[in-house]
Image (cartoon, rainbow, N blue to C red; front, side, top):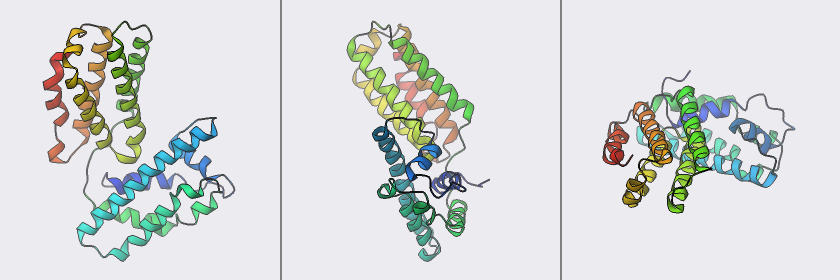
Length: 245
């Protein structure tokens, strides 16, 4: 169990899950399993896996940047990061798992372990229960839209917010709570842009549910993030738009 929650610990958790996968299994199938992707369409599956590998690659860059700032010698961790980047390459997706596994040696993961303890403890783990609660609220909101009589502009906005939240939840195991915070910022800006339209429909179940979803997301993120500049940002933002709902 890692002492800290940060980019290195999240990457470590995901990469460790690949241990024991048979060499002959297609690379794309191993990653799809790790990411929980169930998709019959091969092109869509490849797109979803590639998207998540890009998120992981971005986290490796973040680890490298943060480790340089600590003053630790580059040779202690740089080779491990490079090996991980090779394993995450989308160029080997058509190949078999042995092509990726060769880069995920025990010493590579050990170096990542050290990075996770050296780097700051950025956040608390969001509970599975909270994640499930958010997903359920989003499902309820989606169901309300099926018979909605809201203006098309608002329906389009809510659908976009559903995509924002679902996307952030998908990215959370890789990028952490900051991805939920970024989704909240985007959603907040869009709501402020059409404030009058939202006010006009504020008594509808769809808008009420939308407010409930964002309130839950912001509360979860404010609890998770430990970096002081982020603390309570969601609730302060909510205090501005709360009257709209």
